[in-house]
Amino acid sequence: MRARYGVPLTLTAVGAAGLAYAAGFEVRSFRLRRVTVPVLPRGMRPLRVLQVSDIHMVSGQRKKQRWLQSLAGLRPDFVVNTGDNLSDTEGVPETLDALGPLMEFPGAYVFGSNDYYGPKLRNPARYLLERVQGRHGLNGNAPVVNAVHNPWEDLRDAFDAAGWVGLSNSRGRLKLEGIEIALTGLDDPHIKRDRYAEVSGGPESGADLSLAVVHAPYLRSLDAFTADGYPLILAGHTHGGQLCIPFYGALVTNCDIDTDRVKGLSTHTAGGHTSFLHVSAGCGTNRYTPVRFACPPEATLLTLTEKG
Image (tube, rainbow, N blue to C red; front, top):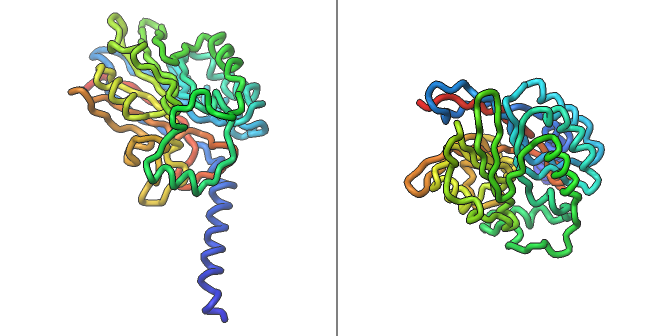
């Protein structure tokens, strides 16, 4: 009897322990990723860029709020928010409270689908199957059918009032001490709100550095930015795979980028050019799948240095 039931019971216990760890510990194990990117012109001082992404704020997430507030102690030169701030229609006040200290710094932002629309309860197995089969996004439905409207306008107004530059299918500039940064951004490709034709043409002249920003790193957006000559692209959306296999990595990316580049710093080549690409694993999850495994929540401090 013991041999007959021992293995199933052991597997059940291991699975339960893994779920408890993923939902009870790792999902709240916030950490900071640090990377160095050699993209600056010779003679320019290093720049510290804090990227926050995929916060997916739900009311009551006090530890996440405190951790985000603490990031202001890094004293970045500027902040880039790559979207999906919300996972709760009531989450705007707590999101703004969490980001308040960071909004004292220069910044820029794009939105993701979860800023515009509330999440839906879905079968996680179906989600994984769709991604493995290569089916991505919401198939271009705009507006998304039967979606709950999030109050993203309140988020936008607060960011704008703080002086952050909105980059949804638009360009903007940040002026630091003696340095001017040109930024070009897209609205979320995951729900086909991106309109690259409105911002095409490559980096603007007269800036010390040009950066590209998008929520979801779909290949069409990466190809366009890279072919136009942007040295660095910042994105989020993937959650780093969210549920990963130790020593193997992510199974899915939730877009058409490969799993080898699901998070962290890599490169992208298109049109005879190569850009650095940084994909943040983000610091939150959809409210209906509040688990992470082998993929802790994160923000990233990128130190931009002179080209080699």
